[in-house]
Amino acid sequence: DDYPENLRSETDVILREDGFFANLPPVQGAIEALHTLRTAEHTVIICTSDIFANKTGLADKRQWVRKHLDDDFARSMIFTRDKTLIRGDYLIDDRPAVQGVLEPAWEHVIFDQPFNRQTSHNKRIKADWSNWKELWS
Image (tube, rainbow, N blue to C red; front, top):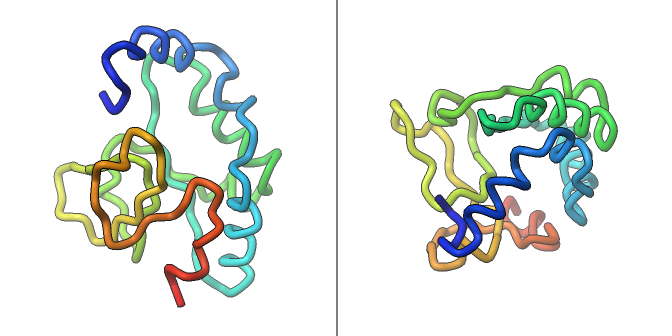
């Protein structure tokens, strides 16, 4: 729903491909940021949703995390469509509005993408993660 109408059918085909998530390149700066946060003794948990139509998506996402981060990150991953069920201080997500059954216990930090730039948020991580340290200083 976050993509323009003219791209939805093409996007749907791409997102259904086996191995799609496992083969994505890392976002510049994100790997270093996650390791730095964990080294500073923050609890960092990757919380991601499933694209139900992609039958290998969950396994692909865990494979990607093992390859680009490590087994500890992969073991602690949480897969859920409703991120309001998750407790924490922050949720970094590209969805402009994260909704679910509970009132979020976290502050939404938006991960900047072309489709969410019309949404105003107090905290926004640039697509290259170049400003992540400023957000928590």
